[in-house]
Image (cartoon, rainbow, N blue to C red; front, side, top):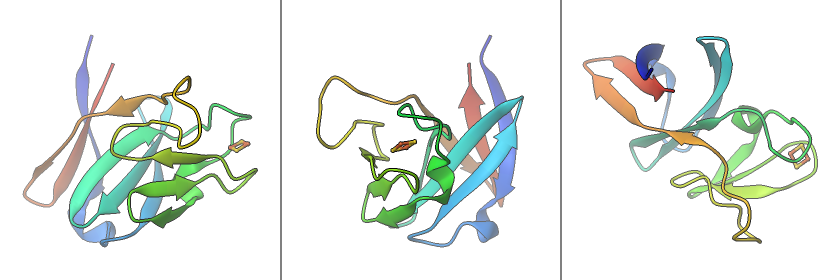
Length: 102
Ligand code: FES
């Protein structure tokens, strides 16, 4: 069942930033790309690194553990089409950031 969970205040997520939150028992990585928010599963599929603590450059986040890179707008790995990380729809209501989780 899909659930919409408030994970942050919009004012906490400046443009160009990465953040890590926990919600509904999951780790969520939240990114602000030019004013649009994107959410990925916060656990890197390589070895479990914290994607929400990665450096965001444009729409690409670099995992702080071993450097895998993902397009945060889609979850697509930047070097191989075979890896597409889970992403979640984000909506903003007032100052509330809501993420749709399966
Ligand atoms: S855990 Fe993310 S690149 Fe290795």
